[in-house]
Length: 280
Image (cartoon, rainbow, N blue to C red):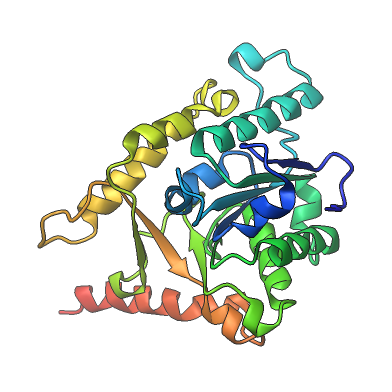
């Protein structure tokens, strides 16, 4: 398989050939940074855990350059930190027993560019090889520009596929802005209860990020617990760990629908819901 960046990394945890590994992919996560998949696409990881079919494949688009270097990593060069982050992502794939883990190795600036032709072409290559049923990526209300760049590149790649070859579902997930603000009827609820041990093991892999004071591992687990508890005020918790997602599938049904036009009704419904409660 030919990818654009010379150091793009294709890792198959169980050692199988690339073709068969991608072919058994049913759930595909496309994230910006090392650790995004484990934080936002845990539902897909669980779908493929310890199974031949379905299988989860992860794609990380950036190379880890510019990462904060603190604690025991304080004296690492940027190049050394990139290597650390690459290996952390590989280790997460081993623990989560992914079908495949692909790191495209782009600088963030290349992902944020509009359009981003090379990342888009790589994603199209992978989508054609994997033909997943479900794709997890960043949501259009995320506040991280690189995350939005990945969403844009992912959507453009998906729209190059014939309609019959597109995934059944495209989900926009929580990272740098949660989706608790969505009206309840607009939330896609992904129950990941009963797997705290695996989640903790996956999150803890990214020591280069959590060791310097950004406790992403605790924050992600707390968000999932909070989602479960605060989802419904008049019902006992159905689960103890819940991710919220925004169903982006309509964007695969209508190629003329822009992300701005797609997200606006959700924002309008949230605004109307808040104002309704305040009306005397």
